Length: 139
Ligand code: NI
Image (cartoon, rainbow, N blue to C red):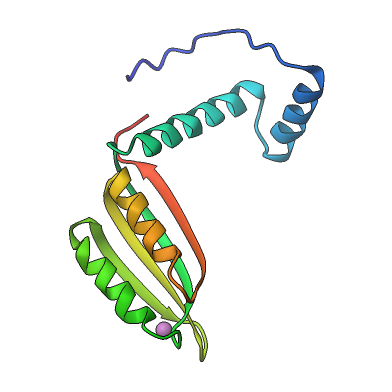
């Protein structure tokens, strides 16, 4: 998969869509359309690998929550221990009297991480959850 020679191909799209795409290219600061398309394709491939679930990925789960929420801390700890082999590190920040921010760094099969992320972010008391991911193998 490491053929890095550049190949050209043509893309057809509706004028309106192309105008919006050009706006996006400008806003995101891409040098040209090709660069933007390459990024979109990489993103789509990562997304697909993610959905297939078998690829080894690394990433972080960010959780923002109220630690006063009944049973939340116990539940978060229980869930994390159940998949301890995919958790590389956890860092906890006490943001103010009520709110906590927790950063969990993970590595494992995409489907395991996806399941973990979903379980944690859907807990009652978690007001914000964000997940970032990168494939461990180069795309
Ligand atoms: Ni805290």
